[in-house]
Length: 331
Image (cartoon, rainbow, N blue to C red; front, side):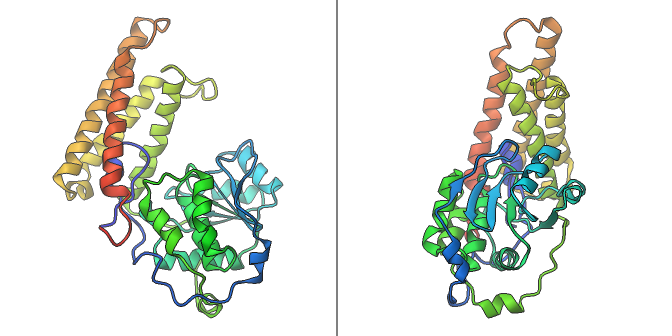
């Protein structure tokens, strides 16, 4: 089973399952003639934005970036002229808000292990045929979305294959995501006839496997805990709704529920052990926050809070290297 993991706790991430299957993007038909839109291409560049995470212009028609969250982000997309949003993330797209701003959503998710051949073709047809400009996003806009935008534009003849990896580098994609880099390195232009004949049901939202859905929820909670940590383990000023101890509780519950899930019980013993260790660290974090808050919020937070997070981070890194970042075809 391909694993697609989230940014968060090592264990969970490591267990993530990929909702796309198939060989790496290298197995394409012979390169085709390059679309004349390649002439519109300039070097990938970061864009200035207030509400969109890590936006990178890949082509005159295509921008890569992170999750548009809330009215301000969707309004900014409209100001940029965007007509179509493509999500390659596992989370359910915010179709209602997109519709409110006159934007179409298309959901074409893929994992961190690379962009499968069929998904490359679907992305290529999307950027070629759907109304643009097009905004392709994942959660943070640093890994999956730049890879997707890169292979889509190369396969559609809108970006020279020699520039594919540059897109990932401009976006700050970690070299640890070997599968994403491999997809960018190996994708070649597709025959126009292949894309003409390809039939794709561009849906605004698709179902994903339970494991992947759990990973998405965990990632969002982990992001909240990171914001709390950056605010000195207090409620972040920008998010007055986040209670530190409660968010730690939710984080621990994610681990607990995963350990109870039947699909996790079919995973390797090592995965389950790491998941249990992350649950323990999250419990210690919650207990430490409640004890500290009960004593006095005026005192400095105990070092144990950071140590609990460090344990989760260390496990996360190890799991990414062994499970999530393994390229398609090597699993």
